[in-house]
Image 1 (cartoon, one colour):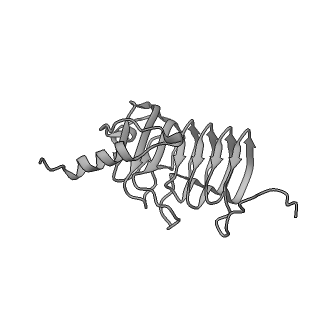
Image 2 (cartoon, one colour):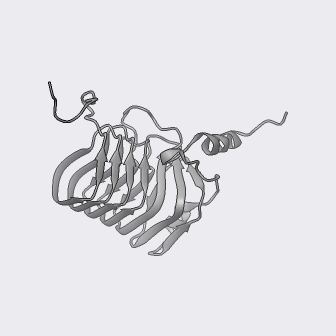
Image 3 (spheres, rainbow, N blue to C red):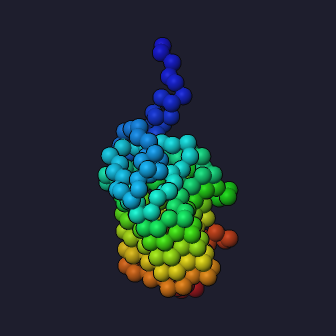
Length: 219
């Protein structure tokens, strides 16, 4: 019987064993050096064809005025649970669209592991039509950020917070579904935050057990 390489086994696990929201199977694994494209983007749009892309470490935005546009249904997975899936630091005008972001083997409980999207000292960041799912300690972590928009995204199953904001201004959360996270918000020194048309459900309080029957009590 022919032996499978470690990479072949990983590919099989990712394709056969991992599913997105609603139990929809992820597309086949493909190879593309997305990081090299981002590093050399120089303000251009980086286009990612439909597929599942697996990396040891997370992706990093390095240039201003860069858009990472994924064909809808595309998954980007990272092996190292201590690494952010996507980092946006010290840049202006970064946009990511249509990406499903997670780790290959998500942790079920919080262990100080990496967030899904980590944004620091940046300006003009847009996350649009993305799924930030079931892997990070935090769905979106933003520190020292001005003009951040999270719109039409699904933020689910993160083990600590859906959002962690520190020293941020002009934050817009629009028409997102935010569900099944261990906690909803952790915010410090945040000014000018807009939240509208979001569906928020079944998020807990990390430091206590979830109430199985939220709402007014009859007894």
